[in-house]
Length: 315
Image 1: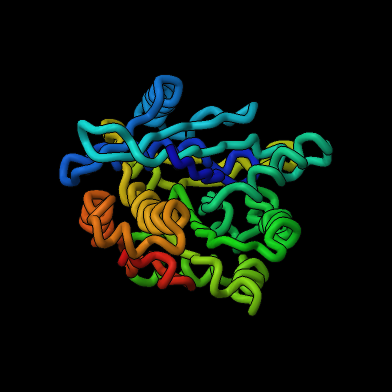
Image 2: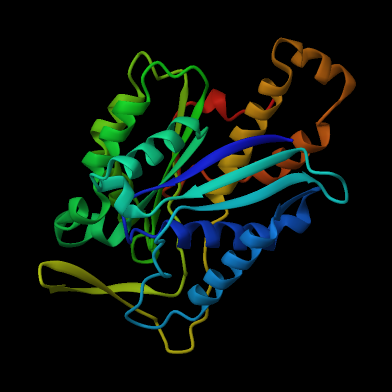
C-alpha cells in the first residue's frame, strides 16, 4: 500500500493535536456523502477518541487538550467503502519542544520527518497572533524558528509539497468581513519571510500554500491574557454555560490535503504510464469521490490558496 507522510508542525501549546482531532471528527460527520472512507488504525482511533472527549468537555478558561510529550503517529487508510484501502496517510505529531529545542537527536528527528513529509500543517495559535498587537506571537508560534526549518530542509526538493497554514482557535476572529480580513492580513505579514521563501524561483512550482482558519471548538471565545512568571496564559469563555462542542471548518484542511495527496498518489504510482491508468479507469472512484468531497473547499471568508493551484487540481 502506498504511504504518504504528513507532519503536524509547530511549537508547544499551539494546538496541533487538537487540530488533528477536530479535522477527523468533522470529516467523519460528512463522509457519508462520499464513496470513500478514512479508516484509523486501532491506536489512532483510541487516541483521537480520548482527545475528542477532552475537546468536548472544555470549560471556560481552557483552550485545548493535553500537550504531546512524545512523538506520536496517527495512521489512516483511505479507500473505497467496503474494499481494501489503496492509500495510507501517516500523520506525525511532534512535541513542540523538539521544534525549538537544541537537543541534537530531537532536531534530527524533526528534520527527518520534515524531509519525508509531502505535506506540512503549520498550526498557528490565533489569539497569540492577534491579541495585544501580536505581543505573544513570537513567544507562542515561533515563526522565525519555523521559517529556519524550511530554509534548512527545503533545498533542491524534487517532489511537490503542500503547506497548510492553519490558524486555530479562530472563533473570535471570523465574526465579520473586517475581522476576517485582518486575520489574513496579519498571517501574511507575520509569515512574510516564510511565504517569500516558498515563492522563490526554485520553489514556486513545487509548493502549494493555503490558509485554512478553523474554529477548533466553535463555542469557546478568547477572553483575556494573564501573565504569570513572564508566560502568557490565554483565557477563553463560552457564550453561555451550556454551549456544546461545535467545531467549524475543521474539515477544510483535510479537503485540501486529499486533493493534493490523491494527485500525488496517482502520479507517483504510475509516473510516465499515468495515461494507461486513465484509459483503464483505475482509481476513478477516488478521483470522483475526492472531487465531490473537495468541490466546496473554501477560498473566501479567510480561506485562500496563496500559490500552487495547479498542484491541487485533479484531472
